Image 1 (cartoon, one colour):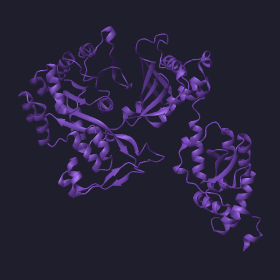
Image 2 (cartoon, rainbow, N blue to C red; image 1 turned 90 degrees about the vertical axis):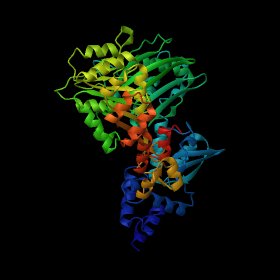
Image 3 (spheres, one colour; image 1 turned 90 degrees about the horizontal axis):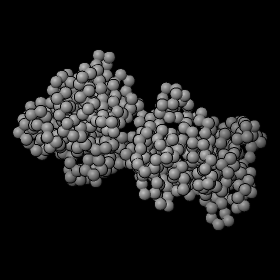
Image 4 (cartoon, rainbow, N blue to C red; image 1 turned 180 degrees about the horizontal axis):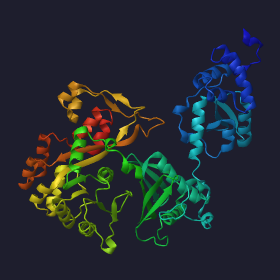
Length: 575
């Protein structure tokens, strides 16, 4: 065989003998790897010359080293601060577990004895190799190093922070905005806060919570509607972290007794910036700071991305383009009402229309729309702003929320006098919205003649398309959940999230989708309203018209494979 005269040995020869790589390719790879100071296995995988899984299996058999699948390994088990990151990266070797005087080290090339020797020298512990796949090892090393980059806060105590520079790296009204990467501050507190903000943007979080407790401090992200702990810096740094965030959002850092509001603008590039709405709250153990991430791109999503069914979208667009009337969007906090309203405003925003909004506070700036920040301290509430709008020749008015009778009456008067009015309420369904307004004191006749459309909504997590799993549900259970016989006859597959998720998702879910109840006020519904019918009568008539309630809309998303039955139950029934 030709390979007998080629100077190959060990793993390279075995891979050639097994037909994994060509003899000449193996020889070239050996030389190139040596010249570039790259491990032989890394060179093969990086250049696509051989599959990492096949190499690992061959190497394990050749050298008698145990083989391990890193995809099931827990990152938290890796011993921290035992081996320098530079050493890990240099040798592409990662300590996995320490047991007494033995340290098990993950390697993709068992001939890399230098790595094992250097780790042993630096730790004073005997090293034993564990063979793993090259690509999985590189990915785990990246994850491990990223997890260690939380600015070294654990090495600091309160005294180390006295001289920290707290200059703002990017504020709301800064005339000279800097790119994120160009900040001159390099202190641990500054780096940690900056990293938390950037990580939140990268992971698609909607909120960041900085929370002090008696003996602990934690940072949590709300991602796809679910809060999870991201970092636990030392408790004694809480005051400094709150001070840094207050400086960045232009608050009074000397005032810790009352809540404060502010904003931060983070410039990611010349064309993209992210706003953070910041609120502080004095708690028992210090100031809790919550940041709401306001991404302008979310307000410019096409209506197709929101999750409306086709007939619901048609109803929404039809009522939006009416010359007058009222469109109400309802749901609890965090159900996506603002995005739905902004999407509607963007559709209506043309040079021919005069649009004014009163918001508390303005979350996202919209070019071409006159936005007013409600300020109760100076007497500028929703009702006052609305009265002023009506003297400014508006075509479309958006009221952030109808909270009282005065605001409701002015909104309805505007809707009856040639204006399109959009607003929100905190109610659970379309029928309850009409009942709530009536309980506020709005006459039934005014409701029946001014309200065009009511949208009740929730946000459900989307199943990850890469790893969702089929779930076998008995027919009896499907009927109990609310599916009809016709649904079952047509046939559909129920999916559930993968228990461990994948690299592209968060516990089997990725992103969120709206679940909607869209009810157009028909003559029959108007009659029930004027007869002071209750919410049950209104809901029943809406069903007769074929307007899906939230539960039915959620089940349709399950049938489409968009979300899981468990998630639909969580957002529509609370279970």
